[in-house]
Structures are given as C-alpha cells and as structure tokens.
Image (cartoon, rainbow, N blue to C red):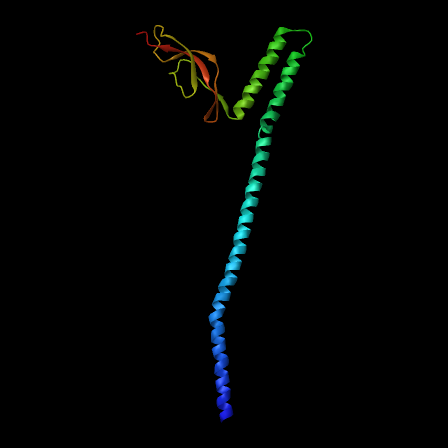
Length: 174
C-alpha cells in the first residue's frame, strides 16, 4: 500500500507541476500575441507607406498627362490655322472663312472641356468674376454699377473663374 500511496503523491506532484505550467502558460500566450500584434503593426505601417507611395506616383502621372485630352482636341484647330495661313493666292474671303472656322472649332473644344464665356455686358458688376478697368459716369438710362463695355472676355472653368472679365462700369453721378 505504501507503494500506491507514493504513486498518488507523485501523481499529485505532476498535477501540481501542470498547474504551475498553466499559470505560466497565459504569460507565454500573451507574449506570443504581443509578438503577433507587433508584426501586424509593422505590416500595416509598411502597407500604409506603400499605399502613400503608389498614390503619389499615380497623382504625378495624372498631373503629367492631364492636359493630353485637351491637347488632342486642339490639334485640329492648329491644323485649320495652318491651312488658313498657307493659302497661296491671298483670297481674303477664304482666309477669313478659314480663321472663322478655326475660332468656331476652338470655342466648341473649350466648351466641351467645361470652359464657358462669362456674359457681363449690361449686367450688374460682380467682383467675384469681373475686374473693373475703369469707372465712368452713368449715361442716361443706365443704372450705376452696370457693365457698359467689355474690354477682355472672361471665362469660367466649370464653377471656377479661369480668367475674370475686364470691364468698364458705370458709377453714380453724385
């Protein structure tokens, strides 16, 4: 019997040892989790750096080639101008017709790209998209602050001012 008692004591001792190991196991598991999370953090940081670099490359490429579409649409306008200039027997009617056709084509290309002429004549002066070059006394029948002459056309690109309209504005005579 003493042998059996000794065996049960040894078994308890092994169970106690396994209890001690279980106490240590959570620490080992947590250390493993910490290492895993640190690796994930490094991977995420590297992925973020790669993403930023890829974004910068794509942005640079986009900026580099952004005007390509407009340039390809303007090339026929250049062709028309060259044809108009190369008219040999200086027929002014054909020359004027060629230049008018070129201007019409260019206006159409710009409109298709989102460029619109700002209509300012006889409108109330708006400093958001108009630039007053001169101010003159209001003639009969004109309200003060009205645009009476456009010196240089202005254009909008979608909702932004591409170039302001340069105008002459009326002022109150008082």
